[in-house]
Image (cartoon, rainbow, N blue to C red; front, side, top):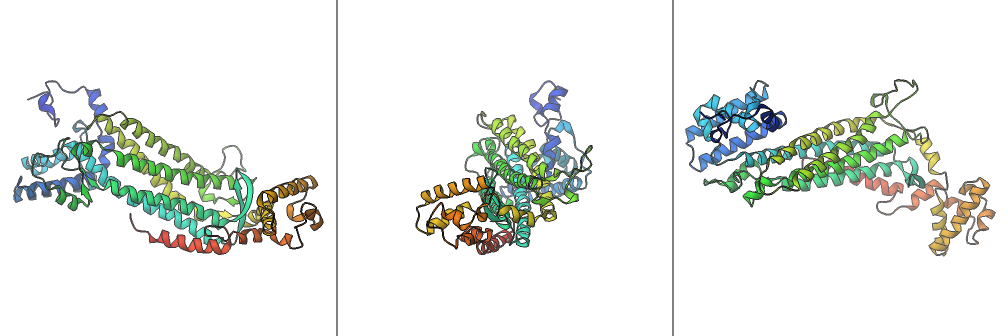
Length: 466
């Protein structure tokens, strides 16, 4: 017997593996979560072997019964994992042989761990994408509920963190609903590239037996089999793409969290976090910290790092499979777990917020927020916009010197900057007039926002899995 006995590749080796090397190369600690998908792929492969006449119907039945028994052990937490068997594939295969007898050794006919792991990851990601899509939809639903609740509430819109123009709070919240819909679009689009069958590619050159890969693809719910066996076993674009989508989604949720943490400061005072989604200080008794939102913001860094880690791993690899590719799983699993945690906590946090609408409304009309409306007023009177901009700039400078808001300047003061200004000017400088003027599709006028809200609700509730 060879010194490598017990390993799937042991026949070639005269010496056993160094214990540190064995621990270093083993992936069981993290790839064990792929067991449902490994079983699913093995069941389909057994049937493919039977269709190809490589195993008898009796052998197929024995394999399927054995795989069912292995599945039950795994599901019930009584599976005897063995680290020396390296990964989830060999653990399942060895247990199958123990339960089903020598026929279990026939299952790997024509199959390699290279196409097997590619299959498992694709099956796993297909399932994950559906769960993430549902989680994003829940965040959208929470935002839409709060937008409907505060449909008439005005607040300042910002550029460069400086007050810019009045907007509706609902309009601001809908911006995130639209962002998240792009995330759902990306997930659905990426699923098409996940849904390609690698099984049958073998180690790299393709299976040496007459496997019907089209039938195999149909059985496992894939759109098509892979077109090139070398690409099939070396491709991790689908992992990189998902990690990219996860990073962009994390960025959007981070921006939402950043807005909320800023609004919760005493300087803004636009929102208060529920006690159930805040923490205190170990030294300052008065503090109420938005830790949940801050951690949502912080988790985006993990998502970015996981994407870069896999890109860096893949960038210099020659065709085809290399053990470096084992390093794609921990970043992938970490991003999946991170998204699961963030998407679970975000909707209830959003629903528990208290928006300080009076404070928002007060701020919406302050600091010359309707200056652009005065310029638009002059444009309607016939003045070119660039000249109107100059006039209003000088008017604001005068107001600052006098310690007056734009709406507090008298008609005489305003006419001192342009004879086109008439008695109707102050009506144009209210927050309500400013909002109502932005009635274009996608604007912040109340009617436009109502229509946008209804359209967003219909789109989000379209729901279902991608």
